Every structure is written in C-alpha cells, then in structure tokens.
Amino acid sequence: MPENNIYKIGISILDCDYLNLGQELTRIKESGADFIHLDIMDGNFVSQVAFGQKMVSHLVERAGIPVHIHLMIKNTDEQIESYVRPGPESITVHAETCIHLDKVLSTITGNNIRAGVALNPSTPISFAENVLDKINSILILTVNPGFGGQAFLESMPAKIRKTREMLRSYNEIENRKSIIDIRVDGGINSSTIMKAKNAGADTFIIGSSFFKSSDTVRFIKDLKDLINRNQAI
Ligand code: DX5
Ligand code: ZN
Image (cartoon, rainbow, N blue to C red; front, side):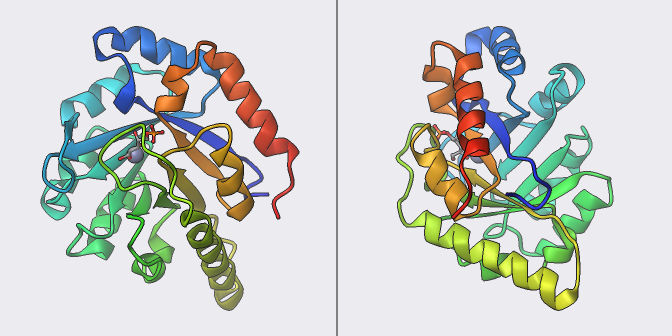
C-alpha cells in the first residue's frame, strides 16, 4: 500500500479534444479521477508547446477538481513565480531544468503549494535525494516526455523500486514519517498500471488511454478496483 493508503489517478488533458474542453473537463470530473494533470511544454525542454499560465488560472478557478502542474520548460528558475501565482494544488518541476532546484522548490512550498520533482527516464533518482525534505512527490517519467500516446518503458519499474527503497531508507535513517508519493507518467493503461503499482508507485497519470475510452466512468472504476485489489509485491 502507499504510505498514506490511497492510490490516486490523475488525468493529463494533453490529448483531450481541445475544441470541446468544457465537456472534456466534465467527463474527467464525472469519471471519478482524482485530479487534472496539466502538462506545460515550452517547445524547448521538449519539442511541443502546450498550455501556459492563463490556462492554469482558468482551470484553478473553474475546473472544480484539483489541478496539478507538470512543468516541462527550460527556464524553470525564471518562470516559477508565474506558475505559483494562480495557486494550483501542486507543481512538479524537472530536476534536469532547475539550476537552483532547492530554491525553486522553496518558492513552491513557501506559497502553500505541494511540490514535486520529475525525473526523465535516464535521470538518476539521486537528483531528488537532497531535496526530499522539500517535496511531496517524485514523478517518474515512464516515457520520454513531450507527447502523449507513447509506450511505457519496461526499464522503469526497476527505477520505481529504487525510488521506493530510497524513500524507505530516508524515513528510517531520519526517523521521519514523511509521505512522498511516487507518481508515474507516460504509457499508463490497464496493463501497465499494475507493473508500476507492483514496483511501488501510488499515483498514476493517464492521458491517451483515458480519452480513447468510450466509458470513462467504467475505465476509472476498473483501474481503481484493479490497483486496490492486488497486493504490492
Ligand atoms: C508526457 C506527458 C504525459 C502525457 C501522458 O510528456 O508528461 O502527462 O500526456 O500521456 P499518455 O498517458 O498518453 O502517455
Ligand atoms: Zn505529464
């Protein structure tokens, strides 16, 4: 079980129907998903461009479901304030882009926003090791970021296991009771979700497989039944 006993599912709207965004948001809320995951892309850290500060403000004010930001931008240090201002529930930054990661995370938490560190598939988990006191989650990218609809990387469960181990020993050595979620993002569907869960993930970000589903209520219910039924290995 996750340390706080709750598995969560968030929906990335990167692959939704942009011309019917209001209906898509309603579909997400009614599905029983726990939050919206908003991928912000600058065409620099990753090749695509998606969303921005204004979208964050509108969603925070009107979506009626918690909004989590996944910042895939190159100049995180310079831009973090502008993403903090709209007040999303959480902001996850890429360790690879932050020159002063500790400072960026302090800016987020100093504004009562939950902070997360995202790691590309090739980035070692040690990039998060010295900021564990500042974060509420580690986001393991299970695809190379930039696009929805890619295949889950089979090498990632081993990394998730290592991350779980790092968090366990951090709590043991420091005698802490910190709860840091392990989130996975990329290629999550009804078959890969169990690989991630069994390796120790407790929060699952889903994009294209949600929007491809014809019955999203059933889709989320089935996934939640699945992850709650099976014991972690
Ligand atoms: C990848 C993004 C993901 C993506 C997930 O760069 O961070 O959030 O939208 O989409 P799927 O589930 O289709 O991989
Ligand atoms: Zn994402």
